[in-house]
Image 1 (cartoon, rainbow, N blue to C red):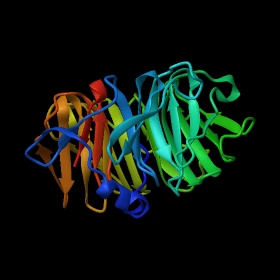
Image 2: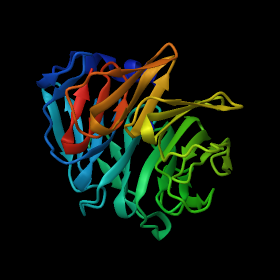
Image 3: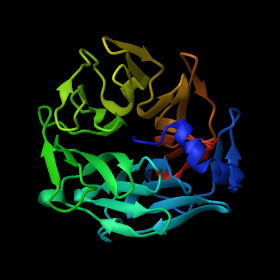
Image 4: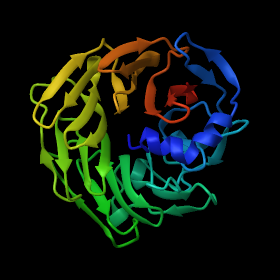
Length: 313
């Protein structure tokens, strides 16, 4: 899941996030707190922005973390048809939140003004869009969207109508996750056990993973030689530019992973959170039994999942 780096999140939103006091429901031994949420349906992704953290979910809902708690700021999605939203990513300056979801839904949301631009169904594609990556500043972004039909759609002109193109890097298997570490360089995973990389935003090449034997769900792309993939059976794969090193952490499916600078998290089924610190993974105790879908690190680390679950630390 694409996100601001921890450093960027701290710079852009550290003061407001640290000052916020969100009503707690329950707390876990490792510092994770379950907080009150305005929705009871699944939240699929979460991102920090220059204003506040935002999460997206079923029914086209977008919720924002404000000083007095989480609030619904959008309903119905970009088209107003209530299509579920599966992915979210922010521009480099944190001012625009790009959201994608079912039936070709794509939206560009200005977090400072509340304005939403509908950019759905590029080139009349109405596949389910699973994830989005964005590089560049608000209004001048490169946008990449991964779908469940094996295509990666891209626009180098801020998603304007008529500027979208697409490519099919593999065999047609869906792409659950995509992330970029620089302007046009990034990685994506498909459901056929493949990881792909690009350094121009248009051409994708497979870089593994042979004999993985698990389904891939999440990817963290920090550099060409610093990639982490999460998958089934609590498996983590780390790439150093030449080889993949697997590590099995248990039996829960891990739907998202976010590591940077030697620390981070992987989150998944049954309230599972693994913390990464100095090269080691350890399981955190959490007050949740829900399937956790996504994590975003910042001044406040945030995890979202099924049943509208939101955990903060």
